[in-house]
Length: 326
Ligand SMILES: [Zn+2]
Image 1 (spheres, rainbow, N blue to C red):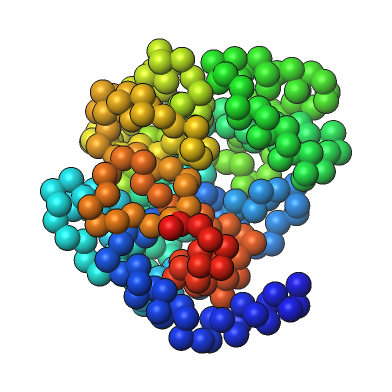
Image 2: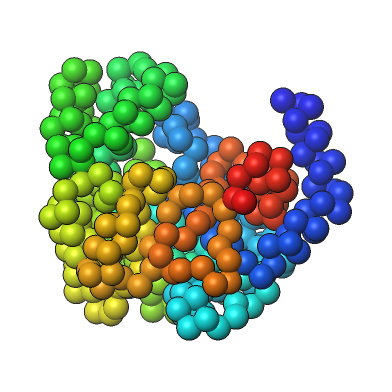
């Protein structure tokens, strides 16, 4: 581990990050965040490292503001749709799901830096305070004493199931383990990281002019693994609700899970039919200046990264070493 750390810090100080960052300067970089945490969390509060400690966020965002041109995702989509060139070093910040911490912890830093971001809401998480089904699975397995490896196996198996039956599958796991997550994320027994945004916070962030909102489905179902009808309902109903609640347009979409197979050519057709002009995936990589605004690639950021690893990831050094994003 110490050796890996040493290599990372040597690489970070070398000219390599500058070279790889320059190589990607005419491409669009899109970063994927989830939630944020005020300090270190217990393992069960941050099992998949998706809540980033705010001190790291501050350092990461400060570096981005210095060396990238951070633009709203909608502005990048405008360029891609019209064949207009992107600014050099264009980068978008995106945050998935709609965690309350995006308002409480990430937004103050966005304001300080005047940095735009796009947040993708799973509407039943925000509107009904229903936990996202993947978090319910994590909760049941953790409470039942399962390790991280078991959790990943169960979840990846579940993610391939027909999503129309996901509710029953999750209920079955809860029954078998004897541990069911409370069906309201404001339940006092749950860690604060589980809380969702409310519409007042969403409107306040939107009114700042810095944050825009897109859809991430209603129930976080994996669109490419649903029937056509269910997928279309997830796409259309989430968009309608967001537009109604914020009193403005919502035409950006982000696929839950978002790996190849989680979205298909039919998913894209349905997203267009439901009125979206862009979709995001979790496929790692950069987007060419002439890319379609559908099925855009992103670079994932989580709490396992320190500033050095973050810089090596965003600048493209890790992609060269690990062979992704080509
Ligand atoms: Zn998500």
